[in-house]
Image (cartoon, rainbow, N blue to C red):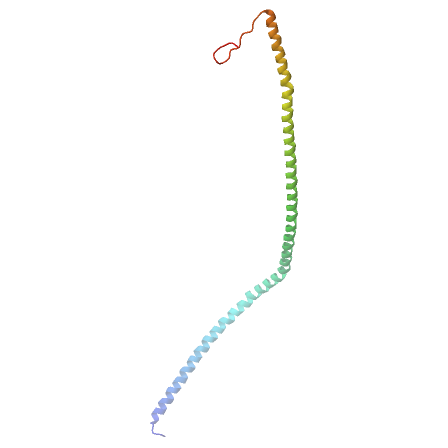
Length: 169
């Protein structure tokens, strides 16, 4: 041997054996912890298979069943939207046409009412001329007759008084 006492080798061997034993115990602890975690993971996996997988399957079945209906509904909405646009344009054209016709009719009625009112005004003026001229003439004739009768009866006419001082005319 090389000069080192034998007890050093024994001590070195004992420390190494103790380190290996400690490492083995740590590995055993890790194994037990891993085994417990694996047990819990297997339980979670089993619960997932029992609950989540059937749920996912029913969701998938529902999606497969509903997808064509949703596509059909979307197509119907697009078709309805296009039809609504077409009908809206038609309604707008109809309303515009009706408004134009109503404006034309209102213009015609306004012209007719204006013409009627003008005609009535002209007729009124003509009636005033036709009635007032003969009425004035009749009034003048009656005034003349009265004056003549007054003269024949011997009455004199009372003089007219002007507003400027009472001088007879």
